[in-house]
Length: 117
Image (cartoon, rainbow, N blue to C red; front, side, top):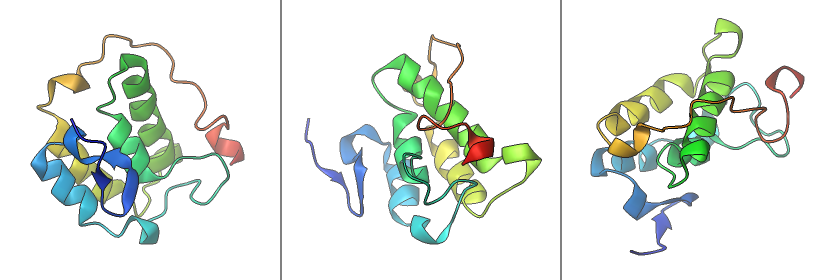
């Protein structure tokens, strides 16, 4: 296994993503697509959260799904990053790592609650 990251997305290892998800993730200008807390200190960017959906730790996967929900669908509002993130998630659905065993609370995003970000 390599430690090589997705070009321009150092938090997302290339080996961890199915090819279709990697293509969607790498081909999107995420810096131009904000979520509810974009730019806030300690709040992860969308690509980092998407990469965490396939993390080895089931609790981290659950946390990533919760983060995506809170950051991309905050108060039923859709943000510019929402649709591109959904395309990446669609490419991840058949990966067995998305079947996390831990269904507990994911807690606040990046140590912050989303409404206060």
